Each structure stands twice: as structure tokens, then as C-alpha cells.
Image (cartoon, rainbow, N blue to C red; front, side, top):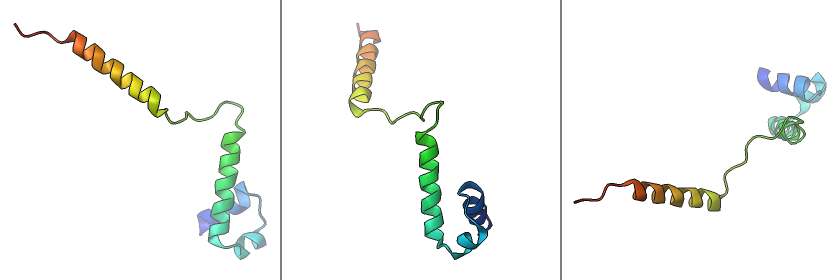
Length: 75
């Protein structure tokens, strides 16, 4: 509960009376929204996005081609 109180009063700027009367899920949802807002409005860039499946597949195919071409043939 101490951590939730710190989050609600510190990061969210709620008053102590608002914090004590708020349900836990409300504090967590508000914190998650605030966190997402901070990520979205970060002037220094966003965290890396998940790789696109098509690009990953293409890179894997290229890796297999390179590996196949570098194999020694049996004599």
C-alpha cells in the first residue's frame, strides 16, 4: 500500500484524501495511463517497436542462404 500511496500522491499528484478513497484498481489504471503518456510524449524518442514478422522472415531466409552457400560440399 505504501508504494501505491507514493505513486498516487507523487506521480499522479492526487491529494492524500483522494488517494485513500480511491480503489486500488483506479490507482493502477491511472498510473498505467500516466506512464503511457510519458512514453508517447518523450521528446528523446520512443522505445523500440516490435519487429515486423515479414522483416524477420526475410532476415531468416537470408541467413539460411548465407549458411547454405558457405557449407563445404562433400567430396
